Image (cartoon, rainbow, N blue to C red; front, top):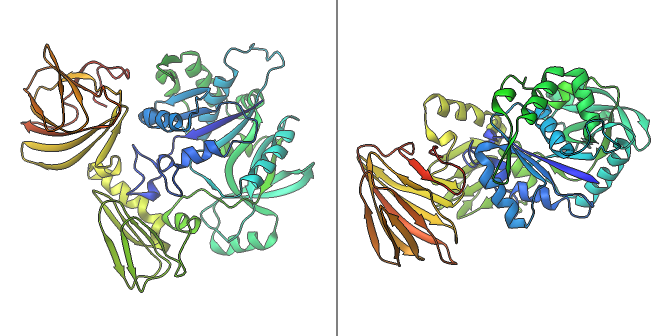
Length: 477
């Protein structure tokens, strides 16, 4: 049976300030009501595929799990990467996960993998399914298949694949081409034998591991050792970080596809985009008659060709052409569309300056819900907590701050020292410094609490977790 492998490890820095290190673009609803990860999963319906294997960053694990739960999807495995090493190792870990429990010699079992990044848009799902079925046929014959996107423009932001001789409904790969300058991109578009490199693949699990061992043995051996040392953590699989640490970081293209003699390409003309920039998101979205895409509370006058996004307040623009304006609760981006590739330079500067905005939103998501830091000053901070029905925060204490909780909606079960009691709407309690405490939501509706912190130090690392149902004891995340 076809086994999907969903790679959900990217950071999406070019879509800052919406996409951030700890809440990247694949977890956002950029087009439509579902997130890009959810759209990737839903796109599999009708292929007769098994439950997916998901490879994600350890820091995103609860967000990914919650988005799959919302779809009613239970993954075959959720493999956590302690740090990113690019696509070749990530796919190797997924292959080991799929082969878990099978005989080392194969025993005739070699599942076909459909490898999909979690952050792509494909508008024509039927065309995607047709291409997948062609690719599966080639993979069953031992080929390693990639999908070549039929280009619609001389795009300089994508790599290209030149097709060679036909092999059934697929084609041998004549060459891979790096992101070209504009003149060469126009030549590729006119040639009709070059495709955009999609980063999607189909091959048998053991077949991929064989070629990885042949062409990138360091990666293959590090991944095998990391998998041998893997442990279960709730519904997740944690690989051995020490064994994985020396693994070289390399893409599957460089490690395998450009070297193997069995690589083929299947054309796909399906309204594809990797949404790699604000300009790409503008192009992939529905625009008005002036070419503007507006989301949220936006007023636009005498402007055209713009992408305008408001998260928390009114955004109004006058006389803009081909610009991007994105507002979040804690940041605003304004840039010409032809300069949006440089957004990653802003993110780099934020990292250099030690600012939190490169990695976190003001609203931070946790497995129990979220908190939003709505006000802060010397020795105080005000947060809004949202606790999901049935969820529980860890039993914890703080060495440097006290907390005052006011219930806005819902019912809270509070642990304060040795006391356990309920708080209803408009009731409050006080947690002194050093006292162990916990919030639980025993109800069926979300619990909203205003938390006022006061003390000499208010950092998130002043959390001592004593008990935690999510396996986070001893951490502050």
